[in-house]
Image (cartoon, rainbow, N blue to C red; front, side):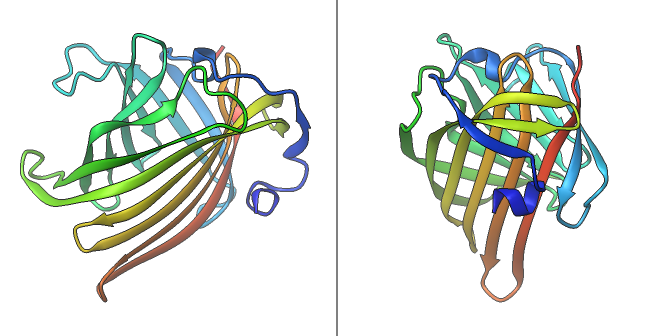
Length: 219
């Protein structure tokens, strides 16, 4: 699946992996540009912009903006781990807040290890962010799958592979989402694959698969 969505030659041979470190997602202001390798926007470029937040009411430290898709608010713990506080989805015009922060980079997690948690979520319309329109619970499993040689337009990297799975129900919607992210030391995310399945009764269905590879990173 990874080869099919990222392209031949992107994911190479396994390399020696190590415990996750803060440098896998370096928090510095800048723009990372990705080439969409598969999906509805195949061939297009997508900027990912990182900005520091000051005095944000959510207590997040950083905003991660994904093209025109939306924003993720990131909090860094005292131990250096990165957690996701909330997400804004512009296409669906909603904001999702997590009662317990979702793991982004869990410092110290060794290859082959995983963590699971049940996380309550609250969803609001962007037009009324303080009004909760839907509640739900997601079962989140976070796994370190080792490290691989990854070749992208921006370069070749030894990259840790992290997998997220989200399963649960939020309001009327059944959610089944799988994400794979490759992270390289001092560079950040160098490739990503998403597989999303959402069904809300008979009125809303979304089934998407997409892959992205790093085209340019800030220096």
